[in-house]
Length: 333
Image (cartoon, rainbow, N blue to C red; front, side, top):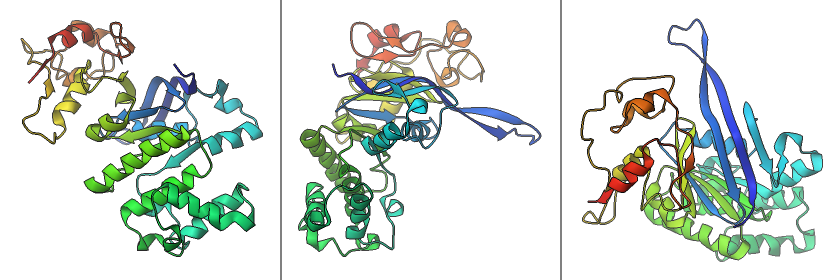
């Protein structure tokens, strides 16, 4: 197993907002005590509904935010202790691809100017060979012939072409990890498949790792080595088989909500609870954060916040008191 290139230990990001009455501020834990290892060369998907903390976690990994609590380490070195040289290396080796490619590209710069700016800024190639180098970057992301795209502005490109330019801009620095925040959300389904295939091809040829933030579990199932499910700032389940054997009730709800290409195909569902859960409708500041939505909540769920722990002998980790019991009861429908 590869050693992690990025490690998060007890990472939290706490914001403040005004209370409903408006006269005092209350803390909001966008990310709450996350422990996570990102291995070199792997594709890790971070999934969950809107507001679960996925994008905030991406900002922390890109050093756009500093964690309120906890530490993020790069190759064993804590980010807040990196000197100027290591910090510069980190920013080159951990690149970003954003949700909206049209807004991440300068509308006043052609494709050639956009890529040349990065090449000049980081002294990637001599000016004599620069045009050939840029053409190779476009060819690597499937934009052929490259010369056809050099003089185009972002508004003259389709959404899929814009996203390929954004990926080319990131990959030309030869990063070890690319943080992609909802890279498929603004694209139609056929183009999404092309971008996913491009990511797989780049990983195979360059061994670059991807951390993909997404709410599309179907797309992530086709590309991710591991998937981490986030709910209210916490990773509640992580593993390589969560789509086939979900262990957390929240993961089951996400999988039940997705659209399947074959409506007659099997879908994993948890059985209905045997009795009404008296704690399921109660908001609480202690215990499990999924308590008010969980149909399987019992008394211990209201008293103790479950921590992420290994499930059986597999690679899955789950934060649920009843994970073993619910996993044994799961049947495909």
